[in-house]
Image (cartoon, rainbow, N blue to C red; front, side, top):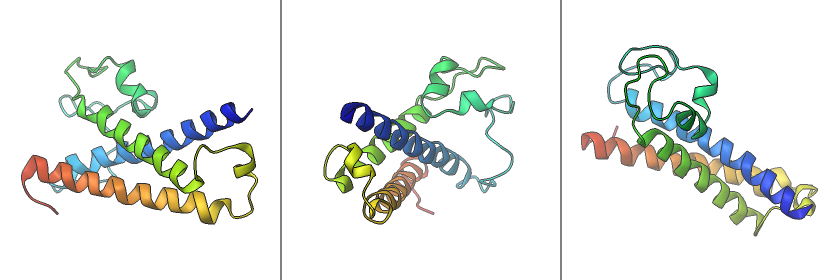
Length: 145
């Protein structure tokens, strides 16, 4: 049960981090261009077709479409799943750091779980992804916003 618990918690943390990474991709692309971070929703940069929800799942969505737009077949940069992967791995690593190792069933039953493990992990993950966004914008434009 402990291995299954650790795996399940790690997968949830990875999905949360991957979602942070997915939004980071939006910020890296849109912020320097002066575009809204919220509207319109995710779309293909080539044909502007909205991305289907199941194609927007961190890392898996890119694999599902084979790295190409489902509508116009233009290539989708491998940077998108890479950023999601890095953000997901960072989030899992930070969760286990704050938990003091693999998250076991006993850890999930702690009264201070939210304040000592979950909240700090999410907060540090957010800031780590923010640093990733700054680095990528700087890499692309040699300017930090």
